Length: 333
Image (cartoon, rainbow, N blue to C red):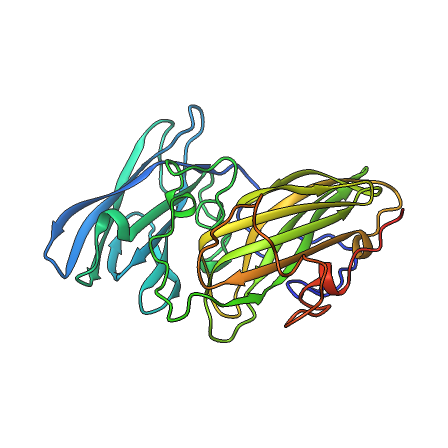
């Protein structure tokens, strides 16, 4: 398999690039920033969250923060280290990592503090989004950006909500203002198999923005499977549903708005599980493609009409970036 390439996939098991930390239980918790002082061009405050488990103790955590029009200048707390994961002129994503702490079942932790600078357009109620992963181990088993995230990976998973993971599940407050709002281009969608045994196959879907300069803030993704060799049993991520079903081909669509896909970066946008027959061929019987846009879609997964996925290999589409149209399924009939 060529990871993230959009090229034809050969079979082997793909384990997440960032899997070091999550071989054990992870919890999410409602998390708040309480401002203790604010002088207009900056502020200081404390972060607070609660161990939701009724039986297990938390010993380490990763707090993720999305900050618009501001930047952390200092932070403190037990075993705390801070890291910037990305930044531009408007937005930063920070991780605050703590280890060798003790939070008993149902107990609240508020020993994390920070100060930040901010611009006049900063508003703490809309300019800061938070999330936290809590773990029952003394050390994370990873360092820095090698640490995997559940809350903070940009994907609002089934177990996450605006309450326990606002950084992933609340509408993005940091969407950049763009000079043009009508551009659509073909992204690179790829599949990474995570398990395949006893007639069941599961995998993750990744989207890469191939542009050297343009940021995408929405996508329309198309997943196609041959009906006689593969049946989609689950499909997750953003707004998604089956849009076409017949005896030869099943088509699923996913629509995302208020995202940030930076130039030449790759993002996990969801995943799927299939029931597959013995004759299933991963290269021939499963395809995925994606359109990227620099404005939000005015449609849903039920109504959006794709460009990559419409059956026509045109424009910037080719076999390496739009397999549904340019290297279509070869389904048994």
